[in-house]
Structure formats: structure tokens, C-alpha cells
Length: 519
Image (cartoon, rainbow, N blue to C red; front, side, top):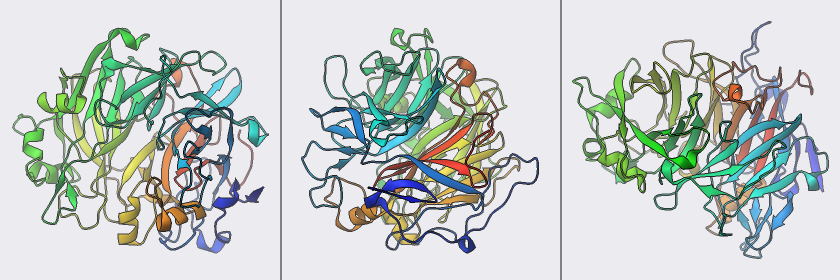
């Protein structure tokens, strides 16, 4: 049995509290003819108390397109990959039980249209075995809605869990990232045919290196951009901060239509004002290097260059040896539309602890400017800076050419410290310094996530997390690479999705409240 609300269809275990009344919503409504993405949610964020509903800007609504309890049409019982959001290999019930099933946490979304049919693809981040799913957005029968794309390699072995995903139109493959330290982490691929169905098992792409990659993004030159998320060692006077330990990479393939033919893995190096490189040896001493302070100040600008990573078997160590510059948990990156792929934005999560006394503790969104996606040099500057209220920046997507959607993954510890669950923000980049963003989403906490936060068996996460924010028109051609076209949400085929990870693992589509139709 499913329950219907203004937010769509959700599993029984995920029913929230009473519907949020209109008086609790504020809005920044777009003016006539304005394509702005609306923000303005009040109160500031949902408190971390009990079960909470999601709250969207008053001009928006959401409807669920998939949820954890949906059975896969072609399950793999041998590995326990049987449901959209659950791995049942331990034989436990799906949720809210001391021995509940593993929650697989569908993560980033990729929306693609094949032959007029509309699909949403995800890799799964949690559980004992990784897999890839496809949600049929045109299928009305819930039991026929989600299929298993792949969960094994060519040898029939299971694969790591996946975090990032993107569509590579040059190879006609989904590229997926396994966010684990070497040798487990790296990039995997599965080829799709013209109907959007898989034609190959998952295969590792060794040339792209092994590291804790999360973000993955293509550019029109065929390069693959990778953003790594590996937490550094504890630091600061109370040990609540973390040392920078993760890198931004660019893979330049020998043949962009075949990534198995190899290429060159590069890592981003930032230069001090005197032209010398900022290296891990400097930043990993105590986490207080003046460069970290300067990088997290509006108006800052530093030169950049790309260095070659020789040790791709351990990309993190190889980037460090090459003199690349580590960041405080960068997670995902996207190109700004309308810039000819000359502006790349990536998030930095920070320390996700209110007690950290290190510079850069609350993260940022950085802007990398180059003369083109394959340029050797550029400049980096902060486009947005985090604070206690706005931090844990994770996934991001451009809603328009000027508006950047950034969502939080602050984590249970910080949720408790600030008594606030995660939020989704709209940063307006038309101003030189992005100030306080508009909140378009105040995430709630479903009953399953609330149970796990209080009584988790230890292998499932607690509070819900916002992930997979995705704005796309589903174009599978080279012209559809994100960053090529200027997005127009809710019109001309552009659709908006996000996943409420953990708990019931519901994936939502965001729609304008005024109409249930897309132009």
C-alpha cells in the first residue's frame, strides 16, 4: 500500500508528519518572463526532531519517481540486489528492524531520453555490492518501473558501490565512480544501446586511475573530469577538523571514443602569489597554512596548472607526489552553461563539524576559469563560501546559466550541533560575490531514517541526505553534455530530480506547483 500526498507517492515506512501548511512557506517568485529558479523557504531549515516533511519553495512541488521498496524487474538474488533501495543478502526485513536489510542509497541521477523514452539512471552507494539501476519514468506500474542495469564485471564478480555517474556520449557509456581509496576506487563503465539498455557488463577503466572519486563530468573535448572525496587526518586543537587530502583530476584520453586506449591523468595544482605550487606537504602539516585562509576569502584569485599523475594505480598518492594541491573534501563539479566550458565549479564539503577551529572548516564552492576545457593553466577563486548555516556542500547543478543549485550533506553530527537538517540552496552567480543563498528545499527526515538515527544496526546511515540534484533535458548527443545548453527548468524538456538518500531512499522530481505539466 502507498500513500499519496502533495509530494507524490512514498512508501508506508516513509510517511512524514502532517502536510506542511502554506503559511510556513515563503517564496521568491520569478518575475514575468524571468526564468529564475525559485528559492525562499521558511523556516530556515527543518529541526532535527522526530519525523519531518520536506519543505519546498511555495512555487514548487515534488513527486516521487522511485522509492526504496520498489522491486527490481530483474533482481540478482545471488548478490542480494533485489530492490531499488535495499540489498537483501542478509535476509533481514527491508526496514525499521534491528536486523534490517542493507540500504543501498541510490545516489547521483542521470536523465536520458532514448527513442522518445525517458529514463533516470543511478549508481548505488551503500550495501555490500554495487549496482546500477534504471527508472522508467514512463512506466505507470510501480512493479515494472525499476530495472537492474548491471552489478557484475565480465568475470561475474561483484563490483564496488558507486557514488558519481555521468553519460559519456563519445563512448555511449555510463561512467560511474567508486568512492573508495586505492585499489578499490576508480571509474567503471557500462555501454548502453540505442534503447538505453546495457550491452556490456561493468568494466573498470584503469587508465583513469584508482582513487576515491565521486564527481565525474565530461567536456566536449572528450576529457573526463574527476573530483575526489577522501577525508584527511584529524587536525586542529581539538581534533575536530580535517587536513586537505583530496584532489581534482582531468583525464585526457588518447581516443575519446574508447577510454580503454589510455591517456593522461592530470591533477590540479594551485600556485601561490609568488608562482610556487601549493602542495600537500605544506597543507598537511597542521591545516593552518595561510593559503587555506586566503583561498576562503571573497576576491581571492590564484593561478592554476595541471600536473601529470604518474602513479595512476594510486591516484591520491600520485597526485601528492606530482605536487598537486589537495582540498578539504571536494565532491562534485559541473561546467557553467554559456561559458564554452571555460568555467568549472566544484564543491568543497569542509569538516562537517561545528567545533572545527581550522580555516576553511565550512567549505566553499570554487570557480576554475580556463581559456578552454583542455587548457593547461587557469585561475581559481571562491564563488561561494560556507558557514555554520550553509555547509557540507555536496552535489550541484546549474538550474539556469546564472543560478547554481547546491545541496548539503552535513551529516548527523553537524545536524545535531546546529539542530538543523540539510537544505538545498540557489546561488546567484550574477553578483561578483555570492552572498547568502536562497533556500529552495528544507529536507525532512522520514520515519525509516529517524529509526536508523536512533536505533541503527550500524551498517545503515541515519538522517536523510540530499543528493543527486540533476537538471537535464535528457539529450544523449555530444550537444547534450551538461554545460553546453542553457537550462530552462520545467520547459523545453528540462527536468529536475533529486534523491532523498538514506531512510526510504526516495528519488523525487521537482515540478512547478502551478501545473502538473511540462512544456
